[in-house]
Length: 219
Image (cartoon, rainbow, N blue to C red):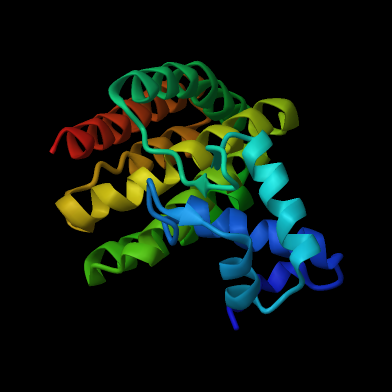
């Protein structure tokens, strides 16, 4: 049985299944182009068909999965045009969240982000792809929580679902040590309360990451 997330305790089964499947997409357990079947997920997650169907329906609506007819569901494969759109959307939103976070972030928030970044560095050092993907997402999630902009954050989370599987491909091609990481610059800007520097560092982080995805897809 696949372990469900610790923070899922007490949630309805359909929500737990949705979150687990969402993580499988976000962190590349399901690869771009990989078909997804209800029966396969029922067996993998050891749950009933109804919560799996509901989770798939939600993820298709969010664009994280694609329904291709004949009951065939797959993880989307990004093309150059999709990467360009995702880059434009991320650049429009994520620097704004970093800017807001810099205005709201205190010493406790910076300390929490530095601890997450330290775990990210450890994963990079060990070549731990899954650890890198999880901690990288956690860093951005924590920063967005500090920003206190739930609408913008929801939009950004939807974008991450679309490129998450491709980021796993990047790790496979380039390794964790060669991935861009401007988190230190972001952290320094947050600590200084410099909103513009935080936004600029976040934009560079986003652009470099998406450029890596584009390069991996071309390769």
